[in-house]
Length: 160
Image 1 (cartoon, one colour):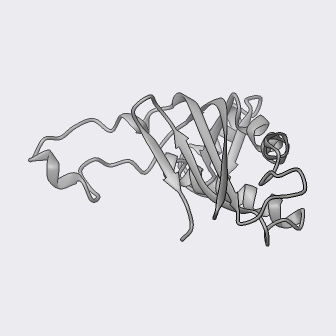
Image 2: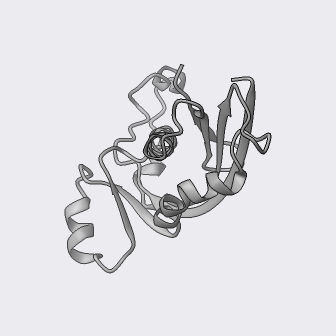
């Protein structure tokens, strides 16, 4: 893409990485036999910072890829849903209890374990769908979605 713009957002949300097992997975070899706790199994929250980058090889009649306001409008409903919600995978063993006992809470129910990586892809796919619905996907592409969970940890999703 010759031209790219990035819009930033913030939202607060809770989640639980119910599949976390630090003794398994790609990085487990670094632990040298230590048995650490799995902190993200616990219910916890983040002040997320979201960066959405879109691009085009051409500019519109206003000499823009797309107005920042229009990107904000495209993701407003999703950000409003995520903000101050608890993001939970419907496959999480705690989901039935959450639904039964905490139905008064604002839940965002997803079909994946809500890691930063999976949430970045979820947001990417959402915006790509919005651009497609508006007939803009031929000209404007979602370049990447970056989701900061903490000041030092972020995930990025892009299609190549």
